[in-house]
Amino acid sequence: MADKLASLRLKLQQTSGRLSYHWHELLDGLSGNGTKPSAAVPFMITSAMREELKARGFEAEDIRTLKPHEAHSIIQSGMSKSDIIQQMKEKEDPESGKPLS
Image (cartoon, rainbow, N blue to C red; front, side, top):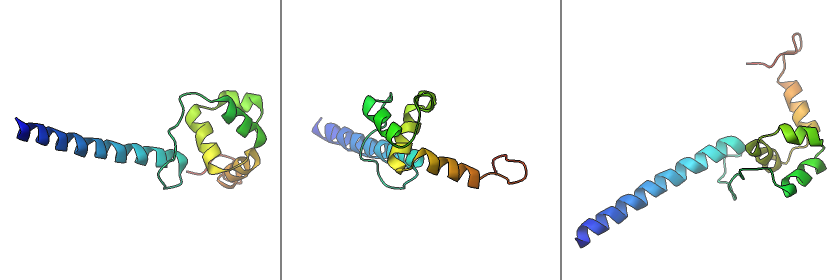
């Protein structure tokens, strides 16, 4: 019985380790910074996040259209609205104005 319990504990530790690794990989992809996140992405945009986004040049309408993970990624990136717009323009085809593939 003790051996079976020890075996189950080991399997649980291994499984939770793999899940934790994949969770961090997912969040790294969202934030794009390649480091383990210090906090989980909230399920809603908090008032503190709204204030941070406003300080970075985002209007209330901009913030309303963001998903929580997008707002979190913007805040984690340290970019302002003008930085993001500039980055998007750099990725457009100069002739058509369409995003580059």
